[in-house]
Image 1: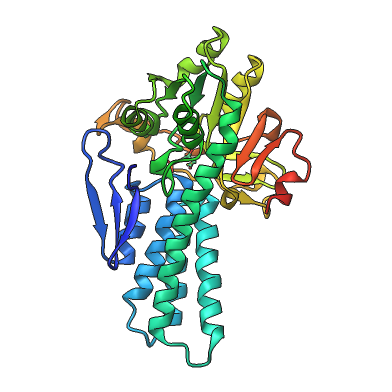
Image 2: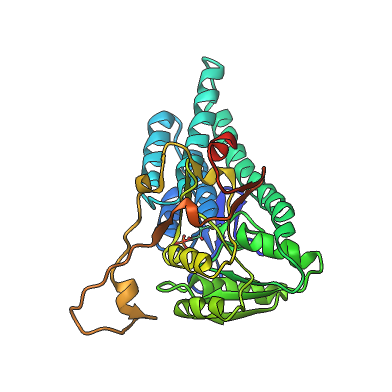
Length: 344
Ligand code: MRU
């Protein structure tokens, strides 16, 4: 199994997702700023993976703190992580988990040792990582029931081992069905502009020997209409209390096309992706990334000099297009009512 991220004797090691699929190289973060840079420049990406990276980055920052100002350092580092990427709520969920653990340690004794706090925060980050892998495997167990032998599954972006602590959410369900011996075929959306589908999902499918074929984003509707797609499975960056889902830009179009063609549309995500403070998807902040990502392809300009481009990294799919949400606690089918909230 791919090691997306790991804690190695006071450093954070991660596979560099920018150079995949051509080069498998790992980077070592020795201070929390290296982890912040890795999140910002997409060395590591995907909602749960970003949360785990932040937790490990916070642990790393505190580990390197002199101790006298551990409280100030801790909150300053948490703030710095919260300014990295705004849409995936797993980031803020992980920061809150680290804060709760820090506050518990501080409160536990009047003479809490700095070394004990450092150890506790490292433990918490590792625990967040392990819990995520377990949750992914549970989602796989629940979700594989929705896949039939012979199905062709369309997926968007990368919601695999690379986007999580390991195994994956949407790709975890696909993996679990494949491991069970079901004969499936995956249609991989290339996912412009950063090509997470072409570069990362294809790489994961190839490594696992799961039959898969790459298509451009604009082909999806035609394949659905021709009866080639049996179901669509995607991940999520944030799920509002009513069941609206923010995910990689292009997800909304797929959901509408799936409805038009009578194809089930499934979202797979851990509980840490649910944000009940957002009542609907309208309250989810959407990250706007640099125009160059759209205006260039592998550093080659593809539009006239000085041309403008929009680059929202995510969109919101209204709950009415979603057939079911698969979490580690089970499958919630539409209409969701209050059942999303009840999962927390
Ligand atoms: O911009 P990215 O690559 O971080 O976007 C990733 C996605 O949109 C994924 O589908 C989502 O985070 C779910 S990952 C399990």
